[in-house]
Image 1 (tube, rainbow, N blue to C red):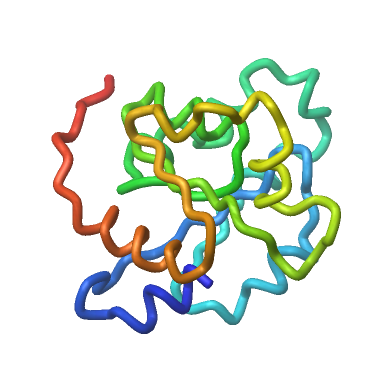
Image 2: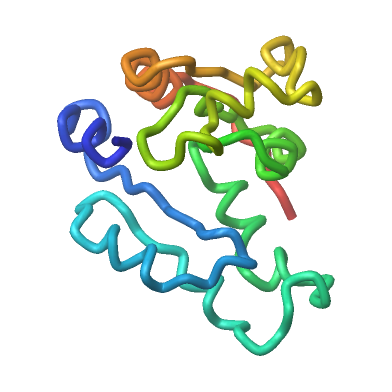
Length: 156
């Protein structure tokens, strides 16, 4: 969906690319193969470089995997509600929450999680967090967030 939004709005996005990063614990190359045809998606390959160490036994996994530079150099982040949202806020990045249902899994959908899980309550009040409740709204919010000018913070 995000690839299509960028493709259909080239005047706005120009050469923008989506960096797709699998969860470090999910080293499933089959997922990335399904994305190969998307012209605006780059797969963060660093997730696959440390196959011998279990994710939870590797304290420096996120830093070693290029995570902080990716987040700090991103225009904004988007996805379901996860720890990445918190990490993006720490690095002063905006986050667009996908809070609508998908057709992939009836039980575990971002919309259901956002609606039913108590720890997401009040998330809409947090600065730099935007919440999309449907696909049309998501497209409009992606464009709006991309156009926003935000003072960049330098990280050492």
